[in-house]
Length: 372
Image (cartoon, rainbow, N blue to C red; front, side, top):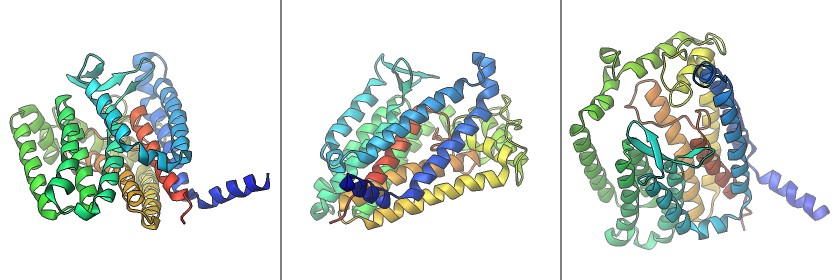
């Protein structure tokens, strides 16, 4: 009995409470903002104003349960099955190209599970990070070579990117190649290899944009959104109106106007604009502060790790969360083209929330391990 209490106390002492608090604060804020941003749309479309909120609440319960499991499962088991996770992610992603795939606008990015839909891309990100962390930690003696240290991980990444482009999901392909770049950079890959791969990927991406006028128009509309305010620039213009209306303290929770069918995707990708309008700069600052806490505590856990696989894994998992947050903020304020990346923990959607909690649970798991 005494030993059990000592063990639990030791676990609590080793848990990074600030990281855990930041996750729960962001999830809680997300639930509030999903309710505020989606209630009118839900009532109009489904006749139930709590439709999206209720689903997100269930997603949050399930995702936090997954986070707890990821925190408590022996991390050695997670590391040992890295190729299984990679294969599972590949199979799920490939299934989106079969009749099992579902989506809108000609893009099949989800799998219909009956009670909910799953976007495999979110699990691909985690599986790819686990694989890259394993690879770079095991191949340090040959990491500078092309055939052994560079070719295998980039081929794996390109397979995933190729399937994403076939969905099509250009933004998702760009995201996982960015993960590969940063993981390779800290993993010790030769800069000349990375530079060459960046040039090739940039060239391929440019050709895809040039050969698709609509996609090119969407990716360049952010440069002059008000010149296309009634077309491809409409969403960004409405987002900027919302942020501008908010001022210092916002117009009040639930009092925003842009969510009244002016701002598309108000409860998903552009939910941060609703936060800015209703809670103002003060509300946005709370979001940024807790993402900053998440970043600092993740970095602290990363630097404390003695073995490279754990260090690379924490780096990659925290990169998923923070890179998504950075890209979403950049899109909402018009600093980069639309990528379809939701705001971690806050945007409506079960797949992304599941992936973010999985990343957080694994980071907590590595952070609470006893170091010999």
